[in-house]
Length: 232
Image (cartoon, rainbow, N blue to C red):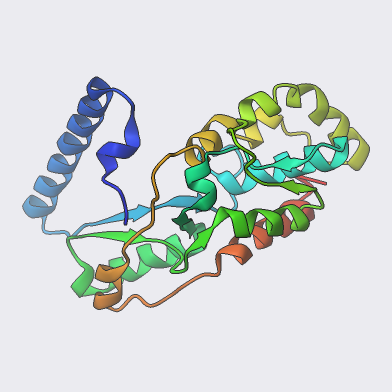
């Protein structure tokens, strides 16, 4: 099930306390303004977002596309970087397009007013099944979890030296690899040691029935990144 947001934020009690206090203060201001001015609100809680966003530090899809391109071009394996738990566990993600649909639906559906709503693709998967498919889609040799995490921050320590040559060789847009790829965030996402998936029951009961196929969320993004000359 969707884990409590407090679990997700930080490793220290001080960090969690600071974050939650900030959220509560911000939410309280918004709720008070809604009551005072007569407008409604909704809260939308995605899981890992997959979609078109260059320079967004929290987009795993672009990071994996860059990682796969570097692996293919250098002959390295497309190695799963995360934990055993994430490799084996059931999980889910959120397509950015589906999130946009959810926002519009909530804004135009009276029953969804003043609600906090989870939003994910509606399917679940295991990385041990999806990872080989993503490797194939990126033209890289996939290697699964083999006993210990191998963080992308370590694997891609030389990406800043490699990427400009790929840009030149393939005529790509001149974008800095650190702008495109967020190694640390994908490491944090794939390195979690708890199973995490999301309950869509409230949105379904209120009438939101749209779904996305998760593999297609990734592969459609990869196709666009190639078409836009972001990755080779």
